Image 1 (tube, rainbow, N blue to C red):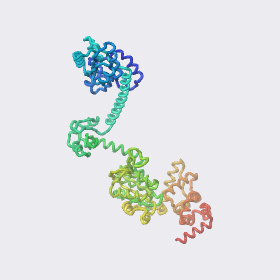
Image 2: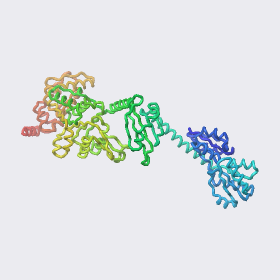
Image 3: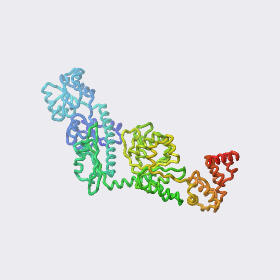
Image 4: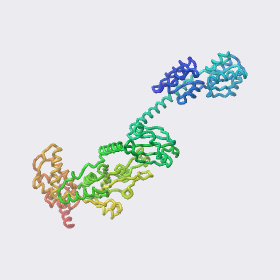
Length: 608
């Protein structure tokens, strides 16, 4: 709430002012209308308790001089108000010469008023009661025979038997002063609210903050700064160096027996350094912030969700893959994971990060094939405000910045466009990124794990993938074996998946018959572990028995096999010759005649 006082020079103004205040006032301001003249003690007592002072004449001049910090709204007289007073004076006394004795702020044209009224008019400007009396008595000596003045001058004229007419405050002046006061109150209330918010923001900050002007005087400091440090910390050479060198300086200092990072950041206006902001971070607040960041990364899913304990298998090929991946996790080099779809490339990427020295840092996964080139570039490297149509205000950090000090997993790396490949190469070579639309480079410390299910060497030969980027990515190469080459791991994984889905559905886990096991072992698994997991889920959903037979397996694979059979002649041959399905049933399922199926199998035999 803003408090305002209206100092009226005569009581007749009280009712017009209060009426106007009722019309224009609102909840931001509270008015008090008082009859006060000049610099009486009442003025001093009153002004101290108010934010806004509305006054005229000598009262306004006194407030401006004695209380410069108060917001003064002067009741400005109009030319019409002055002219009315001159006409009244002329009518009463028929003077030859009139002196207008009024405060310095009065603006009027003596020659114009003399021309309009036919009377010789002079203006005597005053700033206090002593000036007023001197101006009036000097004017009498110079032949002035009537006065136009305010209430202070009127009292002096009365005491000396002089002719006068008072300048009255008109309706326009009343309305203007009230409206100006209400407008000022809204601005002051807004600034107060903003100041409270900024102060709260500063005090809620875990860092100490001090703002110095160019001479080293404290402009502002938050409560942390005042309790964390003693007087004089800022009075050391670093802030002067930052100001003179136009560049931030960072130092490690011991404050209250705690190691602190102190940053001195120069502040500029119109290319001129006008002060320095000092930010003090102690080791405890840094650890707390780091802990919050880690919790935030976990909430956002920017952590590895799997470890090597989640990778299941006992075959020799499996053990070799895991042993190699564990060794890779201990070093910082880039890794290229290759393998067919569904072999667990992302699972290995998560596990490598989780076992690495970067395990407590972010793990960011992105499917490069899921985004078009321009969108992929902005997601990876970020952008500044206005970089392109639709860019969010303030810009956006890219995934490389988010993954700083951690790992970024680039799945389907073989699908990224050549122009993005060149920028990715720079990250690997220089450890720097540049946001779209930005001019400055940003350092990032990120380990890259890439993965692909395509023949990336062929892409290099065909010119679709940069050879220099390929060699940078494949410093460490991890080839994942397809499920069909992992022998009894198929049955081990089947048992795990059946247990998992049975528990999820609240059912008893069934067992596989010998025939069912043989069929699973002989199936080529073009979809690898992902396909096996899906089939196990179907078993739990479709069958209620305790034993899964060979026919059960055949029916599920037939239902699931349209895309597999159509993908290649070898897959068709594997299905038919392995005994999983009869050729007639397979031909029917694939939507082709037995003759067409026979021809495809014959072509396949010829290829072999």
